[in-house]
Image (tube, rainbow, N blue to C red; front, side, top):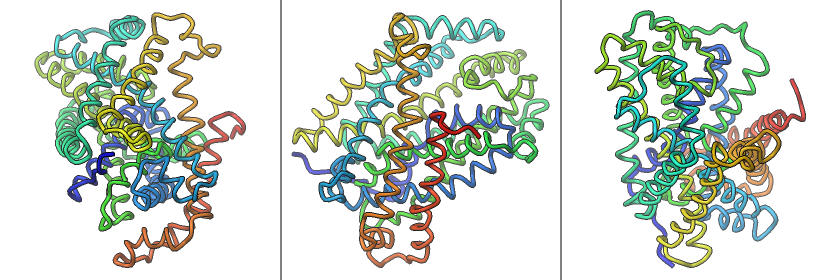
Length: 455
């Protein structure tokens, strides 16, 4: 079996791991949840959730991954000494494969919209945008081709290894992503009446706070940081012994949150500028925003063309940083557990994910059976539901219980403090959060998401 890779630089660790968290959840899901849940009040609750739930959970997965220096399945099995807790790692690998399969379909839509932007096909009113999206997403061939292309793009980064593939790509893609974000934010914030969108994002109205807002913020912080997917555990297995886990978790959470807030600054000023309601929901980037771009820059078509092009390039780039991390989870598992080359392991992961992606893509158009796979839910919707509402929360919950109560304190303390070379003043606070606060938050999210409790 090939020797395991590792990250070569501290900045490589931060950018690659932050790239695993930054994705469509930041640029698509965060803005539409912010719009639905009242703006600034949601943002404040979200930031609190990142601090209380996100960072402790990230450190927990970092500890498991770095201590074992192996793929997620072997990492949990090693720490549990072949006990039942090893199932958490296998569940994480299984979850990541399903996520990559359906996530690549959405990412493929971003590639289609990038292509359409290049060709100038996105000019028109909201009715045109709705028709365009419906026609494309229900086509049995085009989305399928873009899905396969996106998985292959991911494959060719991962197959090159940790340092020469993932780290090099992240060192290019993450700064590029920030540059694109800032350019579009500046363009958006200089539009007429843009201040209304900025005010919506930064002036809190706490009268809008309710249980839905709080649970949405909890859920978004949990999913945005990739908790429970074995991604953080896998990436941490490539960390050096000198990597400060708490500091790294804080830096990654900061980057992830900053991208989400910049995405809000990119979208809401433009939307308010043309009178588009901020609560457009999941259709925001594929139906509402093309109409916004065409209205805002109707007098400057060249500028509108450029902004639209940059925006969908940004979406595709953000999606790619996430799919790379999802792919790496399965790749590491296959080549380490099957004792084959990394290249063969990556191809197994790619083929499996392409098969799932084909089923998910066809469920949006081209197959009546897959479109109504479980009642009114398509196969893609079922994959999304089972991972987002069951497997991810369950994996993160079990990780907190396992590390907080069953892994010896000496192991977690040594990893947390880098064997005494880093101050451990926050260790007790972190351990309390992992033992009590994080599991309770995740437990209530889980019960609410599957409909057992209604608050």
